Image (cartoon, rainbow, N blue to C red; front, side, top):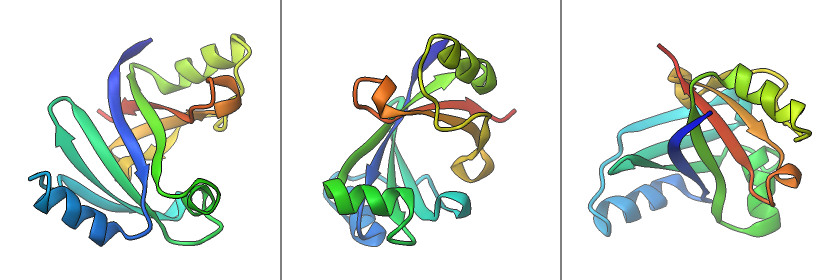
Length: 135
C-alpha cells in the first residue's frame, strides 16, 4: 500500500519568510510553488533527497492551515505517504475502521497529484495524507 514518505507539510504564517529561511540558511531551492484554492492556502516545496518539504501559508484564518496555526502555532502539519491508488487506500482505511477526511481522492499539489486525508483521531494523532502521482 505505502511506497514511501512523500513529504512533510509545515504550516507557516509567512511563506516568503519561510522560503527565504530554507534558501539562505539550508541552501535549498524552491521546486514548485502554487495556490491550492480548495484548501485556501499557498504552498512551496523543496526537495531533500527523496523527501519533499512543503511549506503552507493559509490564505484565510478559517482555512484548515489557518485553524491549525491558531490552535497549535507553526510547525509540522501532516505527513504524506506515496501510494499506488489513493481511492483504494481510502477504501482500505475505511474498511479497517479508520476515519477518513476525504471520501474520494481530490486534486493536490497544484494538479500534480491525487490526495486523500486520514483523520488524526485514527492515526495516532498525526494528520496523514495519501498521495498518488497523476500520470
